[in-house]
Amino acid sequence: MIVSRASGFLLLSLLSAFSLASYAVDMTPMDVMDFSSLEKMAAEMALKPYVAPTQQLDPFFEGLKYDGHRKIRFLRDKALFADLGDVYRVEFFHPGWMFKKPVVFHNIQGIETKGVPFSQSLFDYDDLKVPEKVISPAGYAGFRVLAPDSMLKKPFEFMVFMGASYYRAVTTELGYGISARGVAVNTIGGKPEEFPDFTHFWFQQPKPGDQYFRVYALLNGPSITGAYQFDVKPGKTTETLVKVTLHLRKPVEMLGIAPFSSMFWFGENSNPKPYDFRPEVHDSDGLQIEVDGGPSIWRPLDVGRDLRLSLFEMDKLKGFGLAERDRDFKNFQDLEAVYHRRPAVWVEPTKGFGKGAVALVELSSGEETWDNIVAMWKPAVLPATPQEPLSFEYRLAWLEEQLPGLLCKVTSTRRGFVMDSDDHLYVVDFTKGGLKLDKPREWVPDIDVILSNGEAKVLDKRVMFNPETGGWRAFFKLDIPATTNLLEITSELKDADKVISERWMYQWRK
Image (cartoon, rainbow, N blue to C red; front, side, top):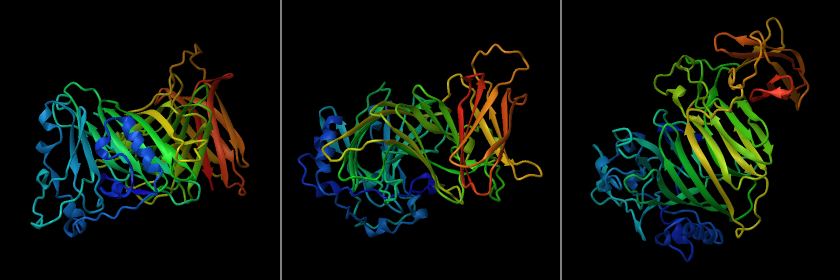
């Protein structure tokens, strides 16, 4: 489940270019012209047994280490579609080091699909002495998409696909951070987790003036196949419109839709903190959920010695995402990682999200180079046979933040012990919110604190105006018996019976 983030990429291998040839299917990659034809290919593959890839690289590329592989640079003037004017362009990553299994690419030109073969002429190998008779890889390790130069008056890389079904995006103002992926299989539930791969990609040839760049992807794994369509538009908010149809080769313990991974090592709520010069280290500091007709939820991230699993069940999801709400450099003090400028990600369902749960997995981590946070949508019901497709559509937004409407927003969570006591103190800051309450200047809201799944007692609770932020600061104290191992804490600000804030939810563990 944990994925290495070394060198900014996920260290997961990809399926071979020839894995598809192992199936006796009617369709070939050259038959794919649109999403419906790709759906047909994925449906046919689901009826055939999964065959593990056997393709290997030439010994020279197979033996490349980190320092050697990073010397290989794609030649910018060789980008796919560079000859079409001011359009979206694609650059490829060379197989080698930890990215050893090539992926196959295709270009859809009108009514014709053409392969995009590997070529050494597209790369600068620096001082690497590549043997004359080296066997070229069958494909590339992954790709990145560049926006038209007119957007920022310079080359702007905004999206990368590399490693299993992982992909990441940036905005015009925020850098790389959270990683999305096509699907999650058995991340929770007890069975070994699977990492299906995007084995083939098809690019819709762009035209000048196109707002979105379209790419299709074929997913293949031991338990699942899938057809994907991504329509991507970069900007202050980088938007990814995702359409997917999945087929289960065999039953799985858990299926995660719209999954993404992030990193949380420690934050303002972490006790004890690692011996590190930085006050906080994380890509995201909370899970945000909106329920249609229900609450807006903020769950601060936290990690401990044991895995934490939280399921937020609902009948109708409005949206969910991981966010980095702390944007103050003083709280990170990291000039290289620039954690205060990592994007939030927001999933907005448009089709197929019925009854289910948002699942949050928080794993302990002793460093910052591993993704240890996973969030996803877990459908309540899964099909029993490969002939029953699962179809979903959703908007994935990479952005500064998803605001909870006019509600008071949680901005920080701190905790510790009450002085000279073993009672627990929680301090939660909220914004003032945008609701017009028409109250006297000295008015402060009430606070509800609800405890569940464990024995504890609320000793004190109050709210005061925070003159430093212009918002509200809530305090409450808890008496947690030594026999309690787990406690769910929920809190909201209220004006009488009216909720005026996000629902703050926290999981305490011994």
